[in-house]
Image 1 (spheres, rainbow, N blue to C red):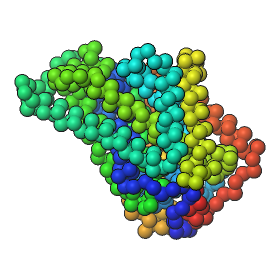
Image 2: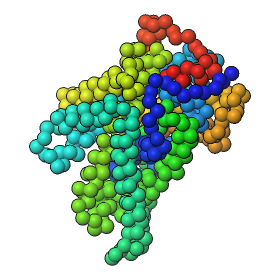
Image 3: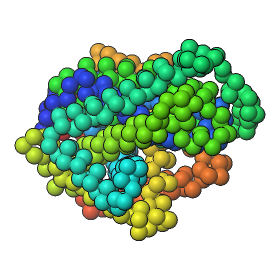
Image 4: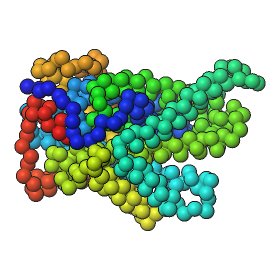
Length: 475
């Protein structure tokens, strides 16, 4: 039977509702939207709108699944724990599912930490061209590591303001660009001709729409951090319910709405599409567009770096509690901060940064090309977990289903099919085959790691969800 949930895990409960809301919203607004969207638009044409819509709908479904599970079973391990408990009747499968989910998620975020440190350094050099890139990367990493080490409230405050700037920038862009496109801007007239004027809405055909959806998948990853952060709030169930609900509608508005306006303002086949938002601001005649967007993108990068250190450290902390990571990494400071887990992520991240300079075409290339596929694997496991946990909750504790996945199980199956479809499509898209193969290779390494763990360590005893409910309070 599913026991009563409690809430105490050694971590502090300092995050407020405003932190949670902005963590959720900011999690999906990264540098990928501001810069990477141009790559998708160039390859797809105006039909990139559909690429972002398809991927956005999948992410919305996954967020609803997470909302359901997190409200019913709030825990610091979030979907790592859900993957384990979804297979309570088959403990060996549950241990493997949890191990893979937790370590793949950690792997994704430490690579993001490295990528954002490198990207942030390049952005700072826009203003400080003579400063060595590696020094800037190290400075950014150390600064945000210290932010995370002080307290979870410190992380929350930084992320609140980083996310506020990103969200504010998108809202202002949506407002101003809408005025311009609708002809309500001085000297402008209603004009959406760029949607069809340069070879049609889908100039390369409809297959690239799917290709674009594959590329756009990684841009959305990050909203799920809110379900991990919920363990450090005073009222996790209430915080999760509000945060996941707020992000669901805004994901589509921010991404699909802003991409729609960009392709209305900037011809998809122009050189300017490489920097889509700068070009859109220039098209509206807004001065210092490059300066403005460089500052906004830098904020997005710092936010991702901050979140990456937080998410990776908390997931590693959860892994230690089940024996899936060294117990020595579970040490907490007096402020309830998993100090060693944070430092481990920082060291790994900076090692990856070093690889970007000394081995850009081998080690770093492997990391960059593999992490996006790993993110899709994590989402697939989340969906499978929800499919199984929902059935169990309905049998044993239906009162906990305060937030429910829509049209269960049909939309869950649809989401799983959609994500598997993306993975399969990658095998047939030339420039996506390498990321797919490297993602599978990363999964293979983790499987080997699991086998080694089983050999070297005595298996942790499988526990029922009733016991896990009590154990959740100690994570």
